[in-house]
Image (tube, rainbow, N blue to C red; front, side, top):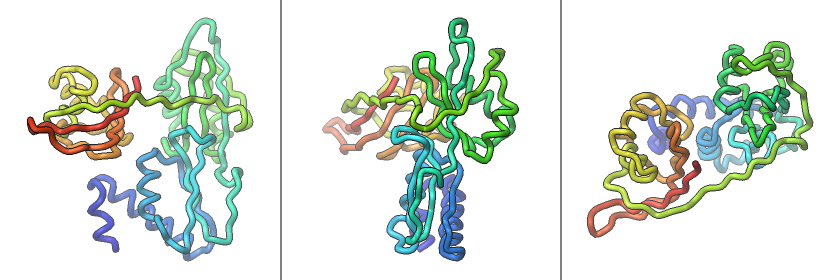
Length: 259
């Protein structure tokens, strides 16, 4: 089983697969649930594929609402009935002088990360109009409340909210069919976002491009169906389908984009 499992994944994902297999063994051996840190959508997909149809281990994900990206996974034996509380989430609302400043996602994330906690302890950061919220693992909620007083130079305070008051974000992807000369990362970015190939390459080399939520610095990486690409300043792109080649030997792909 192990060997043929790994061949479906990129090499840098193998370490995470090993971890998922350990979680599964834990649930089987201890016969009790295992709650993970927050996982990005690609990691969630890997957990789904690895745990798959295991008769003895069930799987649920929750990150505060249906539309959030980052979710905690709960692996559990069949007797166990998961409740929302089992995911141990805390929602914070950020109070800040919104008349004078606006906060951006990456500023909030940067300030949270500077508290010295790992990314896996934070869920989504939700920003809509002037509202700013974020979700953390309950086990670090007190620490966060004690130490998180500023975003950049802006003084803030935190207020804990029930999950029912989460800011609702709608995910809108604009779908289109495009043709590309190759499935290389730089070619796809350049064609879909209408920038030069050199521009795309320099974004990639400078660590400003992510594939499946991980920074990728190889312009020649081949994009696959299901990949989600994001490029700082350009937006995000989902590889919905690769429909084969045109007469002119170009690839026809279906993509979704978000600015």
